[in-house]
Length: 224
Image (cartoon, rainbow, N blue to C red):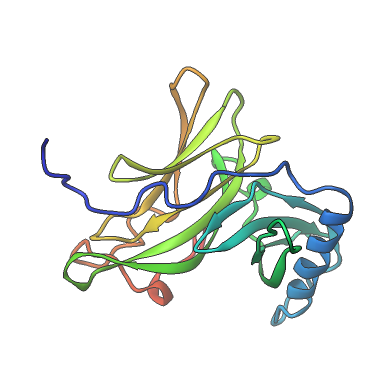
């Protein structure tokens, strides 16, 4: 068989195992997410009050389950982040909860040209050949065009993760910024026809002047 031209981790996270959170479980996750939101330093911005929280499909990797969340505020900002935890087993409930949250004014409503509304957060690293690293990145969002069935995360057109839409929401966990390639999300319909695509970056902002990947803290967030 031919040698694999791109040696990167693919489909490393478990597919979603549960429906979107509801009831007491949603209340538990909301408490952790809002706690992380309360710790945000908004600078000179007045974020306002958080509205209804939308949860996204769960993904499990390296023994932790990640459940992303977003919420619009009364002043038009979007809160985004995730709650992670050690998943339940036969003899114990979920444990070791942690939550991450941030905010943005760069919303889908302010960007009518977007085809996918994306949030992302680096949750780990993968070391590859020659000491190069990929940023293992949690990506979640919703399509802004109709007819989609599944979203993929792709590096140079190589699918590295995918997620079926669940109530028009998706979550990916995939490598990004590896050997000059940055993650692109693509929406497909049930027959496999591509409907939309969005990069995590604007143009080539995820790459340095030589086309190589920037360090995480050097990469500008999408929309900035």
